[in-house]
Image 1: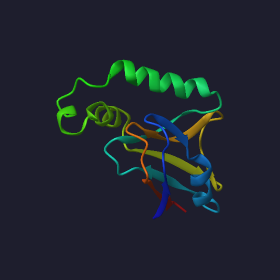
Image 2 (image 1 turned 90 degrees about the vertical axis):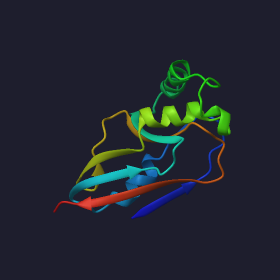
Image 3 (image 1 turned 120 degrees about the horizontal axis):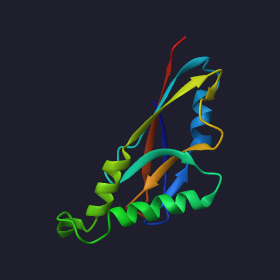
Length: 132
């Protein structure tokens, strides 16, 4: 299994990790790539990354749906909204591989979603399963 380790800089951040993951699938004729983060206040999503407004809209929507400062868990460590956002987005994605390439759509990217940053160390596990 491969591991990506990095820091985040903002409280809310979508970080494109596609290029890092593409390195792990080179040479795989056919298979699947599982991308997973083990953090309860982060997630993995596939969406457009070409236009920065999509990332901003994504974060703005989640902040409207799940505002800060009104959750029971905030009494413990003030990040209840981050846990809820993470649960809705989910910790993983599975992407098919064909001829050494992730089968993403033209505008799609794999993004790490930070909901409780900045954090010194975040991890993403990448498992490539060959089918042939």
